[in-house]
Image (cartoon, rainbow, N blue to C red):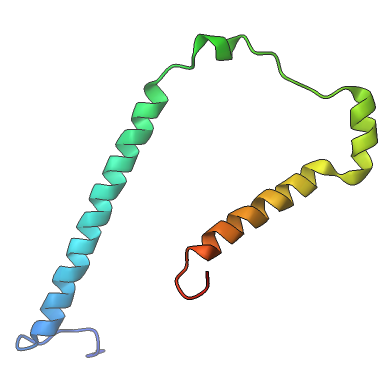
Amino acid sequence: MDESNTCSWYDPSCALSWIKDELQAFGLWIYDSILSGLAALFELMPAPEFMMNLTPHSIPSGVAWAVAPFQLEYGIGIIVSAYIARFVLRRIPGIG
């Protein structure tokens, strides 16, 4: 039997680490419950009436033909992800 994962009755640090883990799990449960409730609240909101009558917007075929060789959809995705990565990395202390 592996003795490294068991606690002794005279080891208070093991009991305190268990309490710390349980409090963290309880905090995460509360956080998850709040976010799930907010998500359910947003799902209950109906879409505005003007959003129901929108027609899909498309670019003219002449513009699409001229932009197709540049693969604009991939380029915009790369640029947006680079800006997001820059934003996240600037928030890390010691790096940004």
